[in-house]
Amino acid sequence: MRETAVAGSFYPGDGEEIGEMLAAFKERAKPAKKKTDAVVAPHAGWIYSGATAMYSFLALEKRKTYVVLSPNHTGRGAPIALSAEDWETPLGIVKNDKALTKELTASFEISEAAHQREHSIEVHLPFLQYLFGDFSFVPITMMDQSLEAAKRVAERLAASKKDFAVVVSSDFTHYEAAKQAKEKDMKIIDAILKMDAPAFYEKLRETRATVCGFGPIAAAVLWAKKKGRKKGELLAFSNSGDVSGDYSAVVDYASIAFC
Image 1 (cartoon, rainbow, N blue to C red):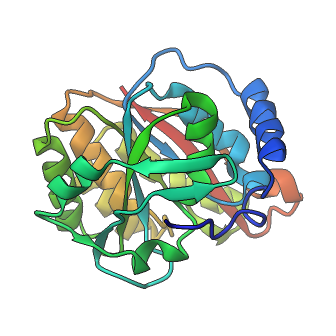
Image 2: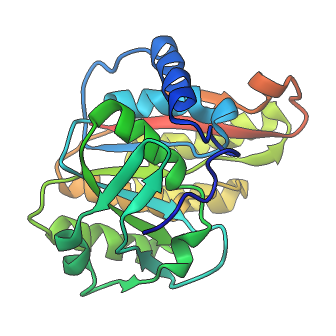
């Protein structure tokens, strides 16, 4: 069992408080025009990014299984790492999809160390629990975020006959002035919406934007293209200054759906 690592810090540690906070986010968010099976959502503390993240989860189709892709902030574990454990949140236990996990071990390593203290997948699980109830999931962290690694992840997921949706956990530019950060991120997001993974990497190099989950984003873009998705849609965009009032050094958040 993977126990909660950031409940009580990144998001509430009490189930009732979680429900109230998510209900408030849902009330503020606009319902999606079209549901999809691939989204990008931010993973900062809920007080900063939760309202933006809700847009992505409301656009997500209900599935029995969700694959959640994230960066590896801790530097622990395998370059591309699966977890085979069930995960605990204050809302209950989220079951691992053992069959899909076993299938993916042909290409990727089970590495619980990569997940033990990583926050970026855990903070998404209560959204899924709140909106969809019973489901299973497969968490994958990417310390190797090269385009080649993203292609490997996308190809392996696309080869599976299992029915699942993909959720990417990523924030965008970190700790720059709001205007400068947004200018960078809009160039990057343009490539994402065009579903052009090589151009996305080129824009990252050009802008030097600090998008923490660029590898998982690229993997989702490539997987979604293989599944017939044609374009991305920017559902919501915000930054930490919208909450703190300090726009001198912000973190940007974006919710994106692939349709």
